[in-house]
Amino acid sequence: MDDKRARQVALGFEQEITGTLGLLIQAFRKGIISDIDSIVAYLQEIGFRLPPNTESLIKAIINDKKRS
Image (cartoon, rainbow, N blue to C red; front, side):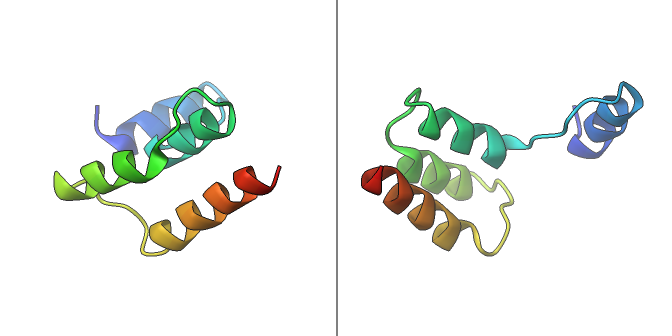
């Protein structure tokens, strides 16, 4: 399903919206996935559009997890 349409449907049901990157971050923080860097790199390789600040955001999240 196209993200735009999916977001419209979710808003219609008053659901919280979380994109692919948000789900990956949640999974990483919960320990469900351990190598978020490789997953994000793969998404970029296959043409997945990510925000320009994604690389620095992921590095900050990894560093935060290492400190905790």
